[in-house]
Image 1 (cartoon, rainbow, N blue to C red):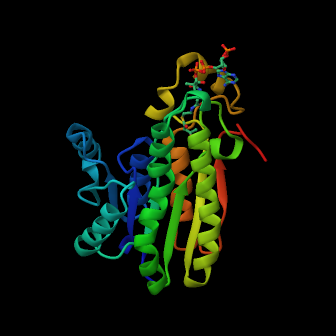
Image 2: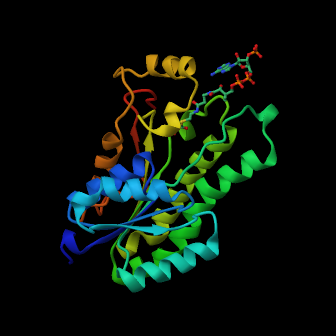
Length: 250
Ligand code: CAA
């Protein structure tokens, strides 16, 4: 079995609020990491690179649009050619288009579905064969507490995030005998740009309902992703791990 340090991880949404911290945690555990994200804003990519300079190339950026199946296929070829076989896939790319259903148009719905749910299929499809062939793989899907409870103004996002967990359980069954685990993590409200853009009074109402009394830190999520992608986590599959400060308990 390969040592941890030889494993290669791909993290989608890799330069986002949770994604960056997930990259850091995986790198600290000795993994080589490809952070995959849109490259439409060069300054965002530059500041990501600068913030991770201490990792000396152990975390690389590669452009990717998870919503585009062909782009995912091309990305997978490029990564495997330049970096090697992918052992760990973290699907963390996600967007919100919050609005009540009565105001929602088809773009609000489709944009969220294409990134948050199609993206998980588009990229998992590229790497699962290789993981099964090598008898090792870890797929971690970043879902959301709002996929468990539903959230006002998020019929699109809640549906995609709940769908992600269904995908997780189904794929977990398909690949369990091949040494590949598939799990989801359902973060609650964390200190990310996505949460900070909620109107302040609404955000404060949400924080008041979190039993631990604070927003989550990205590292609260990243440590669970790291745990699920460990060498010895092979008996945990098809699980959904809630990390929400007690906001929702079922
Ligand atoms: N529950 C019940 N009623 C609510 C409500 C709520 N949470 N929020 C608003 N309403 C009421 C309004 O008071 C209004 O009542 P009236 O018609 O009687 O005046 C009615 O519902 C309709 O409100 P609007 O259509 O005007 O809604 P809005 O445009 O003011 O706000 C919204 C809609 C932008 C979605 C806003 O509710 C909102 O921001 N909600 C929070 C959404 C949220 O939590 N998003 C999470 C993003 S972060 C994330 O997703 C990360 C993660 O995984 C956890």
